[in-house]
Amino acid sequence: MHDCKFAIFCNSGTSALHIALAAMKEYYGWKDGDEVAGSSAHIIATSNIVLHNNMKPVFVDVDARTYNLDPALN
Image 1 (cartoon, rainbow, N blue to C red):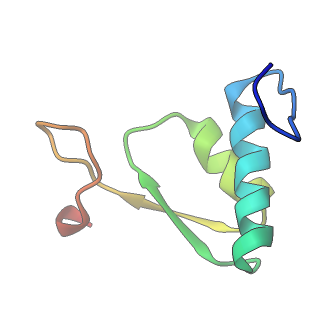
Image 2: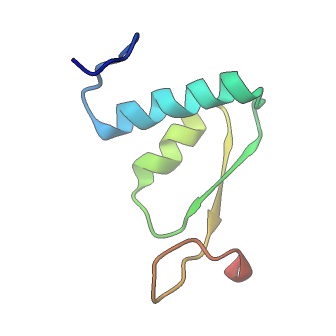
Image 3: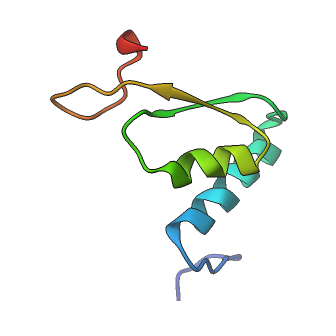
């Protein structure tokens, strides 16, 4: 139906992000303790995903107009 070989069913967006980060960690060779940049204006679940993958969340401020990450504000 979706023309893909594999699929994973998730019960929530949090679970999907947890699996996605774990897969990226494996694929790119990221190590425990590596930093993951994220928005300072998000829910705690996104930080917990990083912590559950044994990585370190780093909060980056967002542009007040666009709400996109703004490294200049870090």
